[in-house]
Length: 130
Image (cartoon, rainbow, N blue to C red):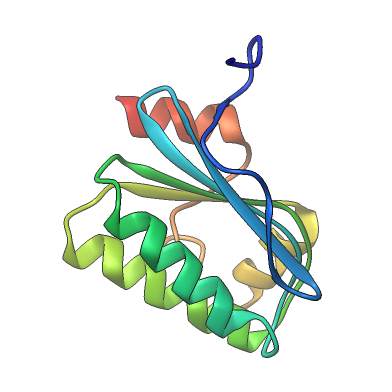
C-alpha cells in the first residue's frame, strides 16, 4: 500500500555493510536510491554493486538520495563518479542530493556539476520529471 505523499516502497532498507544501508523506491516516474550510514572504503564495493544492480533492472531517471549519509570519503566519491559515468554513458538522467556534510565534501573536490548535485529531493524530482 503506497505511503500518503511519500515514495512507494519497492524494497526495504537493506544492510549492505555494517555501516551502510540502502533501498530504492519509485516516485514521480523516477527511481530513487537512498542510503544511510557511511559511504567509505569499507562500503564502496557493496554500494556500487547494489546501485548498479538496481540501475540495470530499471530504466527510469535516477535520484541518488544521500541526505542521510553520515560520512563520505574519497573511496565513496570514487564510487559516485563511477555511477555518474554509468548514467552518462547510458544517456540516463540523474541527480544527486546530499546533506550539508556530503554536499561540502563534493564541492570541496569540485564535483558538484559532474555529479549533478542539487539541494533537495523535490528539486531533483522536478528536474528529472521535466
